[in-house]
Length: 233
Image (tube, rainbow, N blue to C red; front, side, top):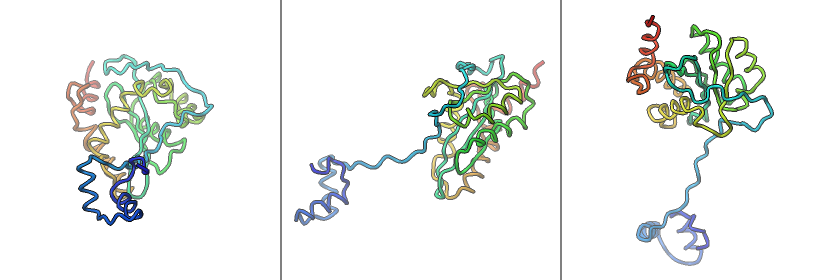
């Protein structure tokens, strides 16, 4: 048909009326159901959180998918995702420990400036007794490749690592956390940005780190697992 099978009921009714078919919405809805006709909805806009189309330096993949909690070399992973609110998008950067699966630090902002990931990293570093030589892994996004962020990592004694281009499996731990967050907490549109800030903070600190049983940790919470690690001789 002329609409290329894209019209839903309202547009189909109007199209038929324009060619002098006196039809109503209920009749068209019934006929569409009987014929299995469905309009095509617009794809929901989802912001792109990784801009790898830049000429900034890209680190090699030092982590190389060494995601085991038993890994002897400490490593942190980081990523950015979007959070929908009725007041607009928020962008969340997180930093997680490979060894404990704890969210060590995070940052929320209305946009994605270069310092979004730096704030998340500094929050994590400030709250952790971190030895030098820790691997910091992310995708190739421009925020992670900025000169200021690379300098900050070097000053704190971290070794930068990046996923291969367009390979989400190279950062599977961070991707898994975001999938869990959006299934268990950020699975709706928040009424306000203030509500989103509070709800995400409550989820991370009040549930995910402190209470949520993690399969990779032998079904212990990240905080409990980290505490056990510190107690080991």
